[in-house]
Image 1: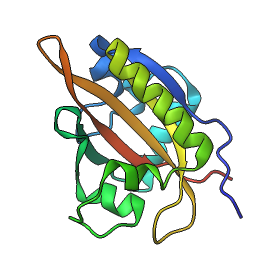
Image 2 (image 1 turned 45 degrees about the vertical axis):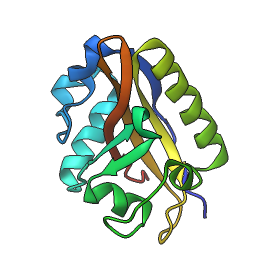
Image 3 (image 1 turned 60 degrees about the vertical axis):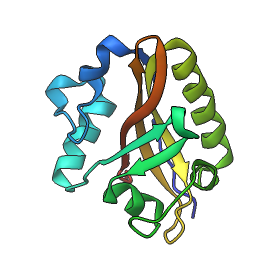
Length: 158
C-alpha cells in the first residue's frame, strides 16, 4: 500500500529566517516553529518516536558532490559511506516529489532562498515513505556554492 501524507509541507523562505527552520544537526522544538499545528505536531512526534534528522550537503561548485550523515544513508536504504551521486539519489524520489523538489531547488539557488518540502521516496531496501527535506543555500561572496540541510522520515499518521 502506498503511504499517504495528509498535509504535506512545501514552502520557500528567505535565508535570514534560516535559524527559524533549522540548526544543522538539531531539530527545533514546537515552540520555535511556525504556529501551524502540522509542524508543531510533527516536531513533537519526532521527539517521542526518537527520529533523528540526517545532515546533508550538495557541493554545487564541485559537480553536485554529496556529503551525508549516517542517518541520510539509512533514510534512503543505502550502505553507510557509499559513494552516491545526486542522479542516483534523485532517482529514488517519486515522480511528483522529484519534480517539486527540483523546482524548489532551482528557485532556492536562483533567488537565495531556503525551502522545506515533504517528498515521497522509494528507499533501496524499504517500502515507500515520506521524508521532510529542509534546505538552504550557502553563499560565499555573491556565489551560492552549496546547498545543505536536514532530512528525516515523516512519521505515518493514523
